[in-house]
Length: 54
Length: 312
Image 1 (cartoon, each protein chain N blue to C red):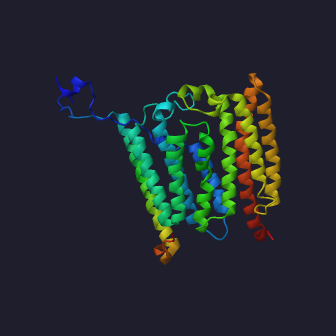
Image 2: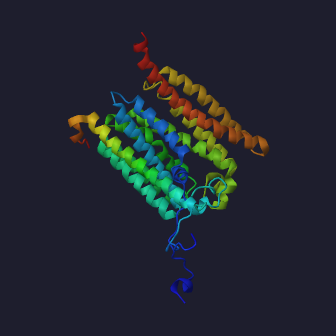
Image 3: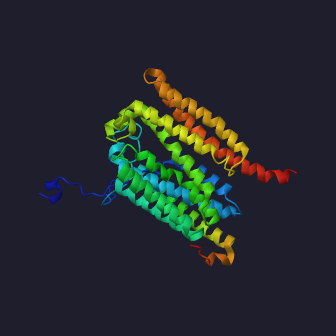
């Protein structure tokens, strides 16, 4: 639409938006793996999870 | 006139163009694969039962720690990386990732890998992983690499530590076996990297990195490669007569070691022309096969030994 106001500030290109989205997904996946890892180790160790050998 | 125009500064925020693949490239995936493999062997030959989830956690942390080291290396070395053909295409010199982005990424990974290994597995392994990252980045990258021709000899210790970290993760202690693995990788590093440096010496000279062929010349490098290969083969065979590893390993080590010695001698003998270039390239390629072969044999021995009672 010709009358649509022009957005202010920095406007990302489609390629930049796509790459930002891909990076965000990668970070989310990495965090998901970290959470799953801590959960799995807690289950495996059971009560021994509280033992912290130096 | 605004401040921006006056000083010629561009204060507009930079929009990152980086793909996920650029961040993966920062981790040096090929180096990481060797680290994972040698660490896997360290885990597998360790005595006692180690739960697969814990083994996976340890390997993941070691791999991420190695990746963080690679990214920190690329952060610090981006100026010389831009000057060398082999490294000019890395994400920072290519302009895909900025130095601060790479630093933040690397430090985050280093922190999480060490803390996760320490909290979930044990602090001996976590501490050793922290030491490995610090040694590679501070001692090798920041101090040795641009200072001495012995850079990769001393710096090689960082690349040799992953099986030791893995053993520590599995057992909570240290022993002779992981130190033998350490010594094998430690003495393997100079012939491997000096073979590469021989046919990339122009690159290193342009970047001002004092690799041995640049500083001492190719003939001295050839002699050093031969001498280090002799020590390497002796060190790699020694666990067999000392009783730490079996005969299958010993014989494999002898056969592969003979191959390394022949190729190192060829590098020493052919000093000019295409024969010299071919000899160095062959030694470089075979050295990867050599290390892989030794560690794969150790892995295979353990797998076969575990499988035999199941079969019978």
